[in-house]
Amino acid sequence: MDTIIIKACLNGGRGRDANPNVPWTPEEVAQEAIRCYEAGACIVHVHARTPDGGVSYDPGWYAETCALIRAQCDLVMNHTTARRSGIPVEAVTRYLLETPHPVEMVSLNLGQGVRWVSNADTGQRQTTVSPNSYEDIVATLEACYKRGTFPEPAVHDTGMLNNAITLINEGHIKSSRYFLVEPSAHWGDGRQSMVGSPRNYFMLTDNIREFYPDATWLAHSSGSQTFVIAGIAVATGAHIRVGMEDSPFLPGNPTPRSNAEYVEWAVTLARLQGREPATPSQAREILGLLPPVDS
Image (cartoon, rainbow, N blue to C red):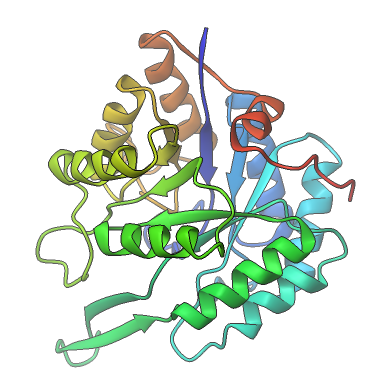
């Protein structure tokens, strides 16, 4: 039976104005992770949040959340290295190096993210940047490899794929077997990135296959595009990510109560294509991850 990795992205950057059920605290995130595991997810992707939903880079948040999850199941833990404007790379490398046990896997955007966002007060657009320079990325990769953490190369467009190829050629990224493919912009949303359309998805993945014929990837997008890209990925042998971070709603369900509902949707879709959800152990084998360290 063909297996498929289903990753649940539980809470990154999502406000409760979009969905009141987004988990923020370690306890809430751990409970959601267990629900997703029981529904068929093998990886959970989480962002540290403050009690009021703000962005956090606290090593203690990650350590507590991982311990709560590890006490109940063997999910692959996938954290983030994304930063807001003005936050130095040391905020990320600190938690990678200082958590009591190594982070198993982190998503790493291979370039900066630029958006023209509307100011809520003035209605005027302004530029915001999620920083990630070459120097930042190399420092993050060094911290990952120092602790045995798997850096998940995240490519939002062909520019970031070119950065991935550069970093692989230079030896900073040590494996070309797997990519996170995330064309997520929407036409007219002011985001300077690839729109999540089928044509753009195939453009990006065809280029990956040209350079790395043996590579696999896990794909997602944002909003309603998530489910289009997921459908294509499932049907063509790739892996997928779903959850509240990517979309506050499901097809036909405007306010899901749990990320597990997204996983159930993905499992149903996969089985219709004759694919069975991978276990955490199978996901580790596919990705070449180290065995998890007990928390």
